Image: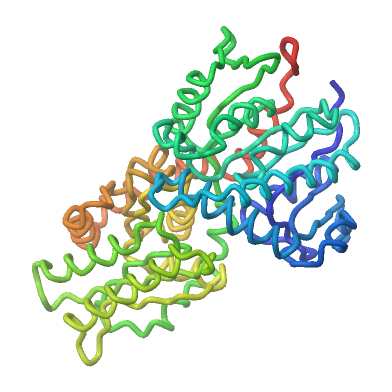
Amino acid sequence: MSEGRLIVVSNRIPTEAAPSGGLVVALHDALKERGGVWIGNSGKRVYPEEAARGLTRIAETPYERYSFDLTEEEHQGFYLGYSNATLWPLFHHRTDLLAVDPDQARIYREVNERVAKLIAEVVQPGDAIWVHDYHFLPLAEALRRRGVHNRIGFFLHIPFPNPSDLPALSERKLMPGWLSAFDLIGLQTRRDVSNALDFLRDSGAEILLNGRLKMGDRRFEVASFPIGIDVDGFIKAAEENADAGEHLRLSPGERLVLGVDRLDYSKGLPQRFAAFGEYLSHRPDPQIRATLLQIAPPSREDVEAYREIRQELETITGRVNGEMAELDWTPIRYIRRNIEREVLAGLYRRADACLVTPLADGMNLVAKEFVAAQDGADPGVLILSHFAGAAEQMEAALMVNPYDPGETARAIEQALSMPLHERQARHLSLMQSIREADIGWWTRTYLAALQKPLAGPGN
């Protein structure tokens, strides 16, 4: 098969001429090298007649970039509704928060049908299509119905749901058809692959001798591709912004514990704040001062569950600070807005410890960014949840159960009292793991697997 262009499909598309951010840069480089098309949602809400106009070309680059628009109804049903109030909680093991709304499910499928029509108009023989994330689970099936026989890959950036949770999804019987229409399903971890295989086997898929799966006349593959970061780029950003920590005006000897997360119930932030409060209550020397700086920009505040998590965090912050603060010391600093990536790199470098304690996470690149940002001569300590996808690769971190505040509190104490030689040894091991599987490795490995020679009928 001759190698054609690469067509990338994502929910959002960078509109600036020089994209930034690890994943965006990696996809930008892959498209620039191979040539192709990037298609994504513009973020605009428009009238139906405007949405029906199709793709809009944006930003001149070495490849083509096109955006599509959503109507207000589509934004509510496709994005806020089915994607983020149904699939997101399901995939993050929170079926108690899952919204069941047939109209939102219908709109989700209709948007995927419309995007499939737009892709079918630009795809050429030999092109490979790479679809990103849970917003577009039905996209390959919609493309197949339109006669698109190209290789179509899918990468899920969030966890794959537990098979025991999937019966909570009203459209669960559609999921096997959605998945089997792709040629390659990329997941973050081995645990995700195991969950996906269990679900597909229970849905009638047959595992072939070559490790592929067969469902009906479709043959496809499920594999783990843990996403990485631009290690050297982040090291450079941390070094160039090493003075960022000075803006915090910490007292001499004051320790800094850092958390950087989107404001989301999957991140375990209330449990983290409670654990930090427990650490303060039981620290061996009450004169030791440690500050938790939590940066948590809001997301999807139109969804009720996100308003509730915000209120809960503000309550815990007020309680801990009210009990523990001194006139010249505030134990928890909670910033609920975006901080520039370069400034974050400098804050990572200053931090004595970083709390990455999600209740469920596909990978969590904060863990990898923190490690890359450290000064190897005097590194900080990574405290990592067992439930972060990164835990499979980053075994030299201090692993914790985020549901147990006492365990996390003890890990904070261990991190802040850890001798230099142990911190250096752990950091060296963690650096090796993130270098071996950086963002360039991830892109190359996935695309090589997607381009493997076709095997058997139905592909």
